[in-house]
Length: 192
Image 1 (tube, rainbow, N blue to C red):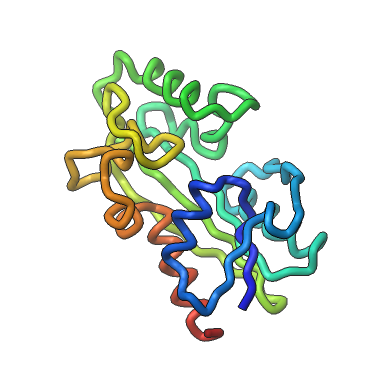
Image 2: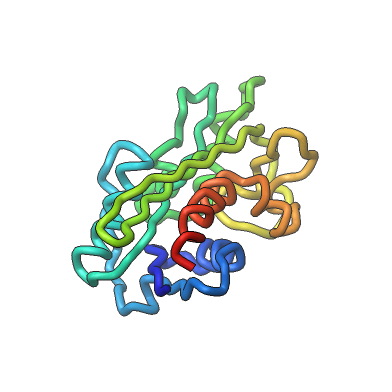
């Protein structure tokens, strides 16, 4: 079965592709010739994921899933949340986002946070949502060179290392995206 993952982010695409069964041919937006920046104008992660999935289904007629992820920091009232990718501006620069977040937390003792992922699946005229959450803390400086986004400053609960320091296989088992993807995979197994 051919399934579009509505992303241009190659790191995210590769992270998800290794989790899917070989019976699913996963393709990206680039692979289907979609070079558009799909608007993420919803006020929730679920809403943004659904906007992206609907865009691909409506414009390309293909089965698709899309995700949206947010980092919710307790002491910042859930910020950056739905604006995580563009926290430091529309240019969506991960380094700038991390710098801004670390600066906002500089004098805060509570550094607890959650990563949340929402996945919207449009498949055979059916629309489904899958969610994943992981709790952790924001460390005081970047650690590790793997991963992407906020991975170098997020330490998942029960671990001593950031997502950027953990092997990909470990991250995929415990991460917000990994949990949401596992729910997606369990659903897709009936079609393989």
